[in-house]
Image 1 (cartoon, rainbow, N blue to C red):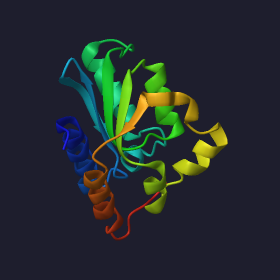
Image 2 (image 1 turned 90 degrees about the vertical axis):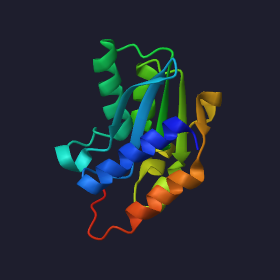
Image 3 (image 1 turned 45 degrees about the horizontal axis):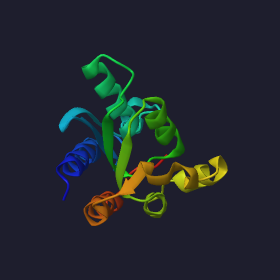
Image 4 (image 1 turned 180 degrees about the horizontal axis):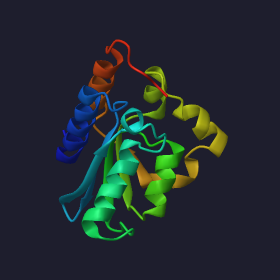
Length: 153
């Protein structure tokens, strides 16, 4: 398993165990070093924008003291929703690696696919998005799916 995806999975698991939100964790890497990480905090913060990727972008920007995350890569447990994908593009992140697909997200109760279709899909992004470590991230999603009384948004 990719060592940076493992960090994203651990970040997501931390959020799940704390009841912060869904099984989405992310880390941002520059020059082989983690410069930011975050997990879904939508429930914790009562804020629909606190997705794992957004939290990681905020953390990396703070740590690097810049909004420009050029030469950075983002690793995330779930394929970014349209909001997070646009945030990655706005932050100038060079490449995004994800574990579970938008269709996997849908299987555990999230509606990313609905918004993705509304926004026109991802065909024009070329190789900007790459799927890795699907099985390990799917295992995380299965753990999340087994939680009783969880809230989806």
